[in-house]
Every structure is written in C-alpha cells, then in structure tokens.
Length: 374
Figure 1 (cartoon, rainbow, N blue to C red):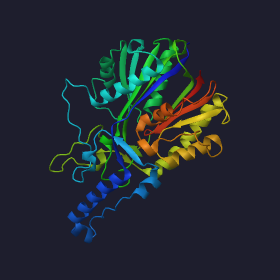
Figure 2: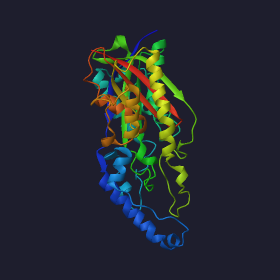
Figure 3: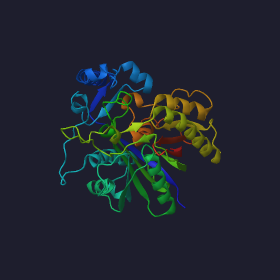
Figure 4: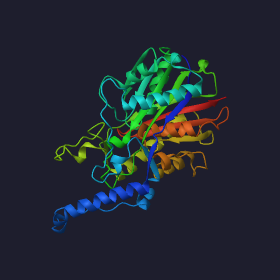
C-alpha cells in the first residue's frame, strides 16, 4: 500500500463577473416585461405575477455578493437571460477542456511537476459538455499526458469523489499520480428567470494533483482518509445537462429541464446528513474538533456552512477555521470546496489537520481528511 498526497492545486477564474446589483437590474427588467405581457391573465387570477428580486434578498438567502461567468451579456439581457456561448467546431478545444487545462497547469506548477509526471486525468464535474468522447481524455491530449483519463459525475460532490478515486488507485499501486479536474459551467444550467435561484451559481474550474507522497518535492497534504456516501433524493435535480437551448417559438422551453431545487427540504435533510458524515469520519480516525485546524466546505449557502461548521466543531468557528469564498464566486458546484482549499491552505503548519467536504445532489457527501506536511 502506498500513501497519497495532494501536492498541488489550481483555480481558473473567468475574467467576467456579475454583481448582485447588475443581476437584480436584469431580472427585474425581465419580470416587469413578463408581468406587462401577462397583465390580463394576472388580473384574472389565472397566473401569478413575478415578484422582483433585490440585493438584500440575495445576500440574506445565500451570502453571495457576485459571481464569475464565461458570458455576461446573455445573462444580463432581459430578453435572453442565459449565457450565449458560441458552438465550437469539433476541431476546436471544448470549453470545459480549455478551462480545465488552465487549472491543471496551475496545480502542476505549484507541485513543481509537469504533464510528464501525470499518469491519469479524472474530470469530475456536475454537468459535462458532451456525453463522449470524455472531456478528461481531451484534457489529457491537450496537456500531453500519457496513461488514461475518464469522466465522472457525482454532482456537487464530484471533486471529493474524484479525490477518493485517485487516492485509491495510488494506494493500490496502479498509478503514481493523477490530476483531478473540476470544470464547472454552472451558469449554463441555471434558470436565470427564476427568482428563487437566479443568483446561486457561477463558473470556474479547479484541479488538484494527487501523487504518491514519496514523489512530493514541495510542502503538501498527506491524504489520511477518505469517505463517500450517497442517498437518492429528487430534491436537487437537473434533467437537461449542459446548455439550455430554446427554440424561437418557445417550445421545449421547459422549466423542469434546468436546475431545480426544493430548497427548504434540502436544507432540512442535507445538514444532519453532512454533519453526521463528518463527525463519523473524524471519530473513526480518532480526530477531535480540537485537532481540526481547517474545514474546507462545499460552497452552497453561507447558512448551511455556518451550521455545519458549528455542529462539527461544537462552537462557532473562529475566523479562518471555515473559510467561505461564496461571496466572490457564488456556488460553483463541485469546485467550491477546492477553491476554498486552494486559497486557504498555505498558512497551515506541519502536522495540522484539515478536512475537505462536499455535498449536494444525489444526495451525495464526500470528505477527505488531510494533514499538512512541510
């Protein structure tokens, strides 16, 4: 048996961002136009008028202040309300592959390694640009990685499940290293015309390099233990996949084909599931709250993270113990916990413990217990 370690991480951040103020202005213009168009039906009680959104509503509901996106103009156009990403030809790199390569190169640079040091690529994300060929294989080809590659999807837990998969292969000796990459174009499967969720998601890509600990050449995080769990639920669902495509006549413009969530049910059911998962994982490894220096949680909702942090630590987390990046990136699905890890891990000292945890549709929960090695 070999020991695995995270030796590098990287984040690709789009150049464009949308503030809550910009988002509210676009949504309210859309809602006003829709209400005017359906004024007679609203007056007759046949349909319900669309309520306006507000910056205060968004921040209180989520803790989000802005989000990065690949396309801004389409989302903020009240007559479009979705990203407009040009269809690329089969001879061009895919959008997700391009994002993923950027994040992978940053992870390799941090680890002091090159593509020649990588044996496998795992593309673990919520929504894939296509069914096949695998995006991971395209990333492999673009980077010049030998070995093999494959895609996997466990929604918001894809990154932690990917880390467990890479760790298990390294432990068994079948590979020496793997890049786990999480490109997320969340803006492409969000219903921007739905007040209850139009603010939730942003776009990003993250990557982690997992290697045999003996191959690490710089400070790294030894992977002490991993744990995954799933439990079926329809309360978070996406029936359509990647990009929304609406015919000019409006046909096929079905609300149930985009991201949907029963928010209150998710909050009530997921929180105890995640809290218990982390507590059991820590207990099995003889790790107490006093040992844990950092919690890198899935960035779904600030209230959820605050609840989990308090439950796991038995108190309100101190500044820095449970970093949030929601305010800047919004929910980025599988990439969220890795953004937090990448941006808030270098200050840990040799021997310090931390835990990466993601949770979401499935339901799914994944946790990775790590220890800093200088």
